[in-house]
Length: 386
Image (cartoon, rainbow, N blue to C red; front, side, top):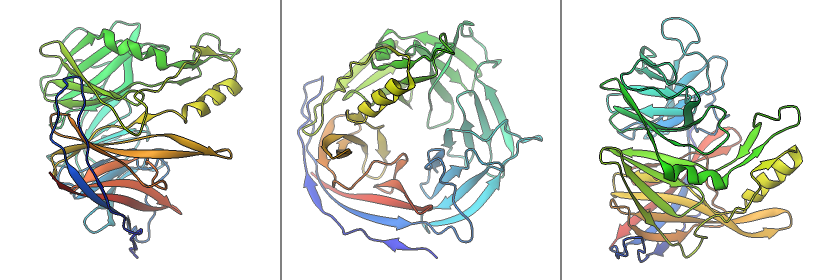
C-alpha cells in the first residue's frame, strides 16, 4: 500500500547577488519552497536499494525512474512510475545468451529520448531497449572506432558523461594504475564511430586533492585513494567540469580547443576545501583517519537541470560544528540560470541530508531516502519569482 508522508511543510524565501569571474550581476530570483516526503509502493516486491539508487536515471519525459539492480545475482531494471509512485515492472537481464551483460555491476544508467537505455561500468557501454534486447556494445579499451587509440600505458578513467542525444560519450583518461590525477579527455562519437583523445593540462591540477594508500604487501600498487576529480556533463560540443572541492565551473569546447571558467562565492560555505594531506600513506589506520577528516570539508554536488524552471540546481554541504563525536552539517541549495550565473542560495533545514541519488522532476528536487528498505523521496518544491 502506498503511503504519503508530508514532513511539516517549511517555507523559505531567499535571493542572491551573482559574483563570478565575468564580474557581471545576474538577475536576482526570489524563491519560496516547501518540503515533503513521498513513498513508492513496491507491491509484493522489494525495490533494490543496496546501492542507494545510484545506478538509476530519470526518463526524458520525467515519468519514470529506471533503477538497475546493481550487484544482484539475477539483475533487472526496475521501472518506477513517478506519477503513480509505484513499481510498475522489472525487466530481467542475463549473464549469458545473445542479450547478455558480463556482470551485474553498473554505476551508470542513461535514459534516452527514444526509450532505450545505456548501461556503463566505465569499461563497457551497453545499449538496450526496454524489453531487454541488446542493441549494441562498446568496449572502451578494445573498440574498433576510427582514430588514434590511447597509448598502452594509459586507460579510460572512471569519470564519464553521455550527451543528452546519446551521440557522444566523453570520459577522462589516466595512467594504467590510476595512481595520479587524470591527464585529459577521450571522445567516443557513437554515431560516426570515431574516437579521439586530448591532453588537458588543467585536469592534472586535481593531483593536490589525492592521497594514495600503499600497503607493505603491495608496495607498487595503490590499494585505495582519497581523491577528488571532475564531475562531467556534456552540452553540445562543450564539456562542463565541476569538482566537489572548489566553487567553480570549467567549460571546455573540444571543437575550438578553448577553456573558460566561472567562479562563485557562497555566504554559507568555504570557497575551497583546504586539504593538505600527504601524497602517500602506508597504514590502513592513517588512511581511515584522513578519510574521516575529509568529511569536515566543503563538498559541492553536481549540477541538475530543471526543465520546468530553466535553472540548474546544486546541493553542497560543509561541517557546521561537532556535537560530541558527531558532525553537524550545513546544507546549501544554490540556483544558477542557463548561462550558469549564480542567482540564489539558501540554507536548508539542519535535518536535511544530501542523498546519494538526487534528481529534478517537474520543477522539484527528489532526494532518495531509505526508510526501513522502503523507497521514499524527500522533495524540495520551489516557487520562483523575480
